[in-house]
Amino acid sequence: RRNPADGNTYDRNVNVINLGGNSVAAIGNADASIAGSALDLIYSTSIGGFSLTTFLSALERTELADIQAEPVISTLDNREADILVGEETPVRVIDASSGAGGGTARANVQFKETGIRLTVTPHVTNNRQILMKLHTERSAIQPLAAADLGFIFQKQKADNQLLVNDGETAVIGGLTVTEVTKNRSGIPLLSGLPIVGKLFSFSREVENRRDLIILVTPRITDDGMSE
Image 1 (tube, rainbow, N blue to C red):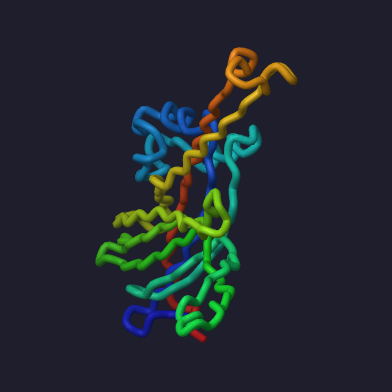
Image 2 (cartoon, rainbow, N blue to C red):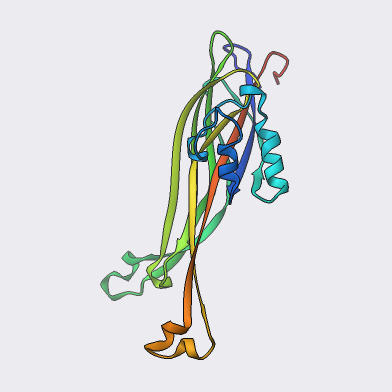
């Protein structure tokens, strides 16, 4: 389809990538123009001839990066486009109002969308550059320690406005998840003794950080795409 105002449609290729382990430091050291961690990544991949796509492919081969989706979408000038890479998770909800007056509370199941959502609104300027308003969101459902207490809805959001050339790739970072795992081990039997058991056991805390990187490549499609 094309915009009746200017005859242009806008295709964009989107890569959704999870980074873990040493990949964040590797990206930070990949080029002098890329400073810090993936939290601060908003730049063009054409700087200094550095190919971020090639670099991320290398990270994927070494299992430091996981490309989760590569959707291609089309939209019109100043029209919003939406991508969801995720799932609908069933959540048990108690209807307290149904138990009023001595009745029995009724349990219902609701489906919540979780995963990675990207919303893009493009606008082509007079010199055929593309101004993009991007909203990125990562969400997940985490059950509480006591199942009867319900769930925690974890959500991270980021809003950006980027100006890029036709066919140029923009990179968005800033959605980071840190998982902390505590492991306890020790000498069998002795570690279970009261009071002195701690002398025969030890605990280790492991922190795993994963950064979400989104690559967006907008392209202007001219006349010839009409229905």
